[in-house]
Length: 396
Ligand SMILES: [Mg+2]
Image 1 (cartoon, helix red, strand yellow):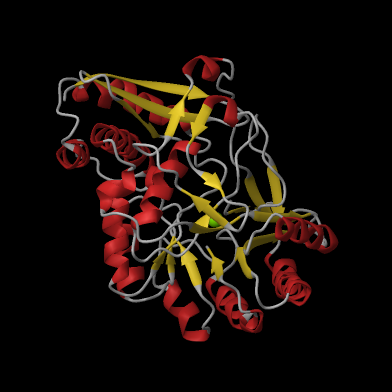
Image 2: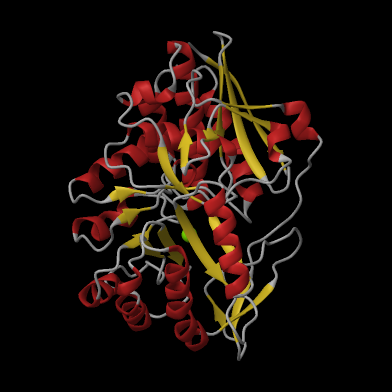
C-alpha cells in the first residue's frame, strides 16, 4: 500500500488546528494532528515544504521505518516543531493501518486493557464562589475528577481562568506571593465543599520557584490532591528532587516534552507520578507508547495532555492509546469549541459518568470534513505573555 498524496489542512473552528491527511493507492486515507498552539504555521511549512515530498511512494504500512527516517534523517532531532510533524505522519499512518485491518486502533496496539478512560475537565472561576459553582455544575455532568483554576485576589487573573482569543499575545500579571497565600486555601475550600470522593487536580503552569513548589506540595498534603501539575519549568530536572524531598503530594509533568529523553531522568529517579506526554507533541503513538512502557517500570502512570489545542484527532489517538496502555492514569479533557464538531467527526465520546470512550470505528475514529474546514480560515493567535508586577518577564 503506497502513499500517493499528503496535504496539510489548516482551519480555525473556534481555534486553530493543523491536520495532515495522507492518502494511499488502496483508497484508504488517514489523518494526524500537527497543532502547536501559537506557532501553528511553522509546522505547516515543516510538513509541506520538507516532509510531504519524502513520503510519496513509500509503503504506508512501514510506520516504524518512516518514524525513524524522519527522526534520524533530519539531523536536527527533537524539538516541538519537528516532533509534531513526525507525530502527524505517525498518527495518520496508524489510522491507515487500522482501517486497512478493519479494526479500531487499540486492537493493533495489543487490545483493550479497559473499557473506558477516567477523564478530568477544567473548572475555572474568577473567584472562589464562581469556582465552587463551576465544580458543582461539572459534578452534575458526572465528572469524578476535576482540575481547579481560580483567579487570585489582588491579581484578578491567574493561569487557566480566562480563555485566550485570537490576536497578538495578551499581557498577564503574576505574583508568586499572592498565589502562594491563596492556592492552599482555595484547594482546601473545594475539598471541604465536595468531600473525599472527588479527585481534585491543580496546575501551577511553571509559575513558582523550586522552594515554593516544595512548600506548596507539602502544605496541600491534607487536601489529598490527585496531583499538582507543572510546578516549575523542567529544563533543570534536578529541582524536582528538592520538591520530592519535602512532600508526598503526587506530581504530574511533561505536557511540553517531545522526546523520551526529556523525561528519562524524571522517570528513572521516580521524581514524578504521572507523565503527561500526548501523541501530537511527543512524536505520535510510536514514541508515546515507548515512554509509557519505560514509565511502567517505575509504576508511573500516563495522563495525556488534553487542553483545547489538542485537536479532536489527537483525542482519537490518545483514547485508543489509553484503551490499550497498561499503566493508564487519567485523560485531560478540556473540551473543544462548539464549531469544531462541524469540521471533525469523532467516534470517541464522553459517557456522562466521568469517563471517555474510544469508540469502535476502524482507525482512530476521527474524520475531517475538508469543505467545512474551509469555512473556518486560520486566525493568528498566541499564548499570553506573563510578567511580574514590576514588569519582569515570567513563564507562561
Ligand atoms: Mg497543564
